[in-house]
Amino acid sequence: ARSAYGQALMAKVYQINPNYDATQYTAKQKGYNAFTSGKQSDTVRSLSVAVNHLGTLDGLVDALQNNDVKAFNTIGNRWQQETGNPAPTNFDTAKNIVADEVTKAVIGYGGSTADREKAADVINRAASPAQLKGAIATYEKLMAGQLDGLRRQYEKATGRDDFDTMLSPQAQQQLGAPSASGH
Image 1 (cartoon, rainbow, N blue to C red):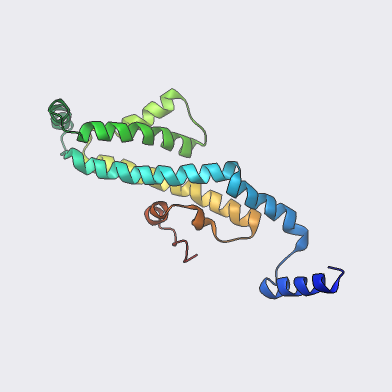
Image 2 (tube, one colour; image 1 turned 135 degrees about the vertical axis):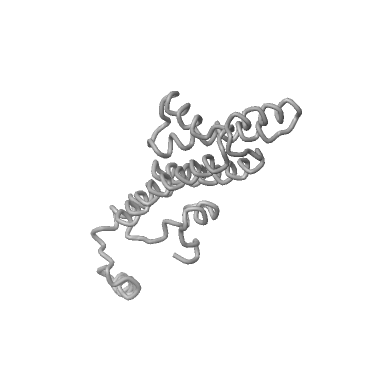
């Protein structure tokens, strides 16, 4: 900032951002790097993908065509599976992936086998549609809480307000985030 060019450049910076503080550049850059290529980046991406997969699972709940009686659902799902209907198998395939992702997202690490089994049990294909959709919505809210914490951490560390651009459009929609162009 000692040269005429440096002074002109800094004048332009302060014109664009009157709150710019050069002493905070290194810390903010470190925060930004963490969210674009570090552990936080991986966490945000995992949460965003998990929310997408919950949306897929929600659609598979409809394909099961369950009712409100668990015993009938168990028999009906078994019948569908034995007669070649893909709905129960598709649901179970997605359920296993989602259970792993939800455990990792909510607990913050891979979790134990018991943790993953508990998450899978909550989304049992014999449950009623209301139970399954309620569990999915609850998982989405828990992930939204994780993402909100990460958003606040990102904004504080970087001084930026573009966190939602790191989320998939589906995650933005399901979590009620402003669109990437609107934040």
